[in-house]
Image (cartoon, rainbow, N blue to C red; front, side):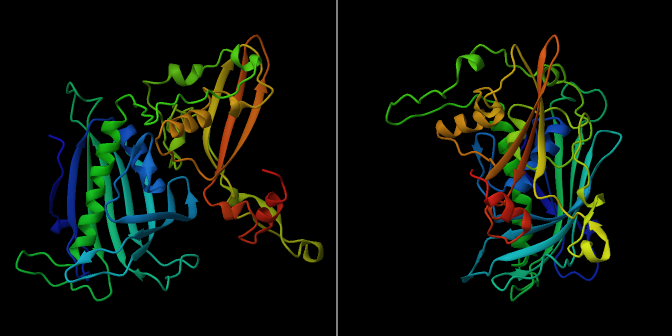
Length: 379
């Protein structure tokens, strides 16, 4: 039974907050690693994963404000207005510190707590609420038959939406303010549905009966063997430390596990400041403009010199093909791909994918020097 169970969680309550914590849990047909990957991917895309469109249960958008290290960041969550009789509420948003880890027993823990941040001020169109919550992804006990195919996803959340919404209990021992905690917990159903639907093959439907055109690929690429040898060999192995896979196109096909690659902390690099010519002072580089979200090691019979992203088996083309079949995709608005050819008795391509989650970062509209530079390059 993978239905959602919902209950109060008084042991988790933070004193001084008017709303009680609520707890929800759901059994998933997935390993803890896959469940964690889907959960982290879902919280970033806020739209869809793979070929399945999510039915959003309250939340409108998600934004990463600052990445602190490999296991924590600052995020902004925005929730749609809710209808609480007799009127609609004002949209709510939350500035949250998020931390995640994997324990020795294979379980995952994701903690979230509201904070203030200079780069995430309150918006005049929203009311800033307080949120305190924990997600856990736990495997089955012992050596049970379904140990590698099932896990339990639990969410405990305490939300104070602020504003005019009354927090006193009604006859049902629940208040209007509890609606936001319920909306947060109902997102567990989205995670369950995504995992269940992703186990099945997608079916394309063309209402006009018109066959889709194939991608134009030259003969060199058509004759090239194209495979992911290391990813295929490691398909059933422990993927290691999963670090916030924030772009879901990285899951289709599976990317090289992150225990074989990582993205350095850009803020640890010193670069010349604006007044370097006069004071010779270097400053921290700050957050990267593009995020490395996937790395592939591709084996080919002959080097592909005319563009890796044109090949029909490459991950961007696979995402575009799903879009042509009528499915929405989760591609970032701008993706930059670095393709390194490794010669030898066998030819390999090391392919690295970088994403910009906002077009303003590359079209010159956000006013940064990087955006102005990129906007001068024909795209």
